[in-house]
Image (cartoon, rainbow, N blue to C red):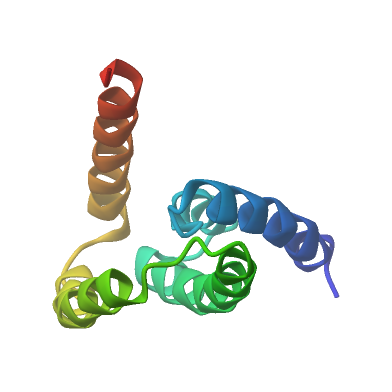
Length: 119
């Protein structure tokens, strides 16, 4: 195992904390890290989703114990998300890693600005 691979577990712990705390899923942290490790955009996103699946299931269990889950709303959002995920994966396949990085950075900056200036 390489040092990079050994660092993935503690990075996963930090991403899990951030994802469970913020509800953002962890991809906003994980994808830039995978890109820094040299993954192409498509593989970084796909790998991130596998990790997010595991993290999300764990976070769901924890939030369910605290009665912080509205299953009806979550499932309805999930149905739309399934459709959007299929479309998004096909769109990403057409994008270069360089283009993806710019778009991803723009989305993160937009979200950050919105959250920062929101009352």
